[in-house]
Length: 83
Image 1 (cartoon, rainbow, N blue to C red):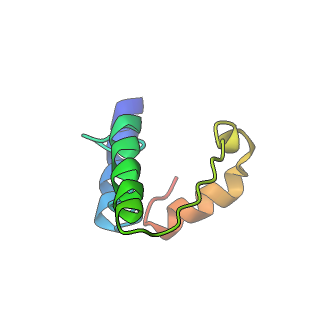
Image 2: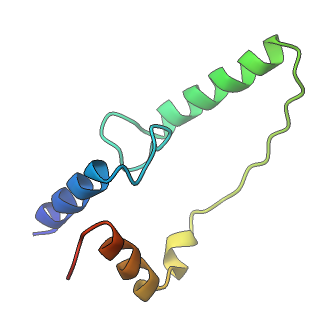
Image 3: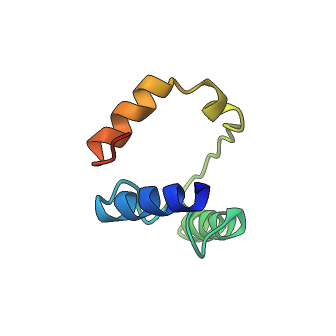
């Protein structure tokens, strides 16, 4: 049942273009590793151009533990998903 629900949500999110091409988490064919490679490629490109580069790392590992379910449901409704 869980896989069916996830499948419907993923399809709707893709149709509505809710996430951009830079989204790596929870995206088929992408992972933390592909995200790291894309980031590294971008940063080294800027360094090669002589541009200054600053990097800030943030840990959002607990971010979804504090998401309001009402807000999340509201955003899912805007994507055309209902209960």
